[in-house]
Image 1: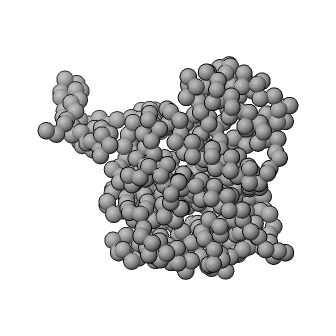
Image 2 (image 1 turned 180 degrees about the horizontal axis):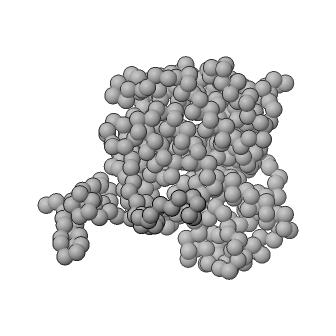
Image 3 (image 1 turned 90 degrees about the vertical axis):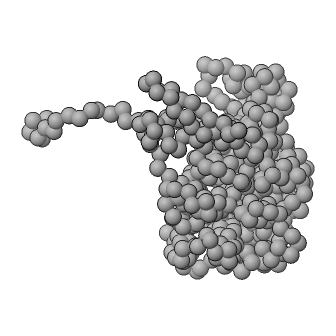
Length: 427
């Protein structure tokens, strides 16, 4: 028997259907609430509001569970590569060997970026933040690809996915090259997707570049861990922009801008800034731990705990091992990384942190890995965007295929009531 929820308002009772997801998530369907009652719900931050039904990602913050299309994140990070996971997210199933090979080759067909894009990137000062440049360049891709994608045409949609995956990786690395004053690099079709990221970033005309296999493996895992995370700020932005039938590049550009914020994709940058602050103030970790415990002290430990996960972030468990591998492989001697290790030890052993579930999260470890790789802090969120790209594409595609209506939240007006207009001389 189907469930219903009963709302009583002004002495009248109204019934609303209850939806139960495949993992027993319960939602009250209030789509007809305003029409039936004249009232709306108000939910700042949408913490209790489901904006859609989705088959892409399941997240249980209380139990520390994350799955893509039913596959545990632990299995995907251990046994799959980033392009396999990208295919899974966008197309619904893990690819066969033939499908994966074709997907990678088809992405390679679209990695050349129109030379006129260089005119656009040349217009930015070297001091421009890479995320601002990336958002602009992503939007600019629309000018070179003006034809709207027909999501109901599988061939068109597949080509759009390959084109977006190919070009986005290249322009993302161009934001770094611009900032460093280096010549812009091009994709090497003899190398893999993640390995290409490394050489696009770091290879110089003065000599060959070879990426460490352990670093490439860790980065591959990081991209997988960031690939989707349910209806977060940037993903919801991509869906709501796309709901107006804005194109894929325009919608992803909006997602990049949303991700830029320090409360979202900028969190790993905030971790490194915190470590730098501790270092600049003498490197006394114990002192800053006490400050973090003092509710009257404004200092906060960044990279610990998570808004959704009330348990250990399952992604952090995976990436901790990758962080250890990278630091070991590169043999990096960095005082900020030493401070990070001390903080990690405290958080995993101190009862104050354990009682509050303030465990190191994925942002804590990703910042450490990026720092060890020599990636400047301003580029951290760009790497997050590369990882999140297949999730954004999958969510945009799902929203359009489901023919979801244009996003249009309501509000409760709290301004002045009607008042008479006064001529300027009488004010």
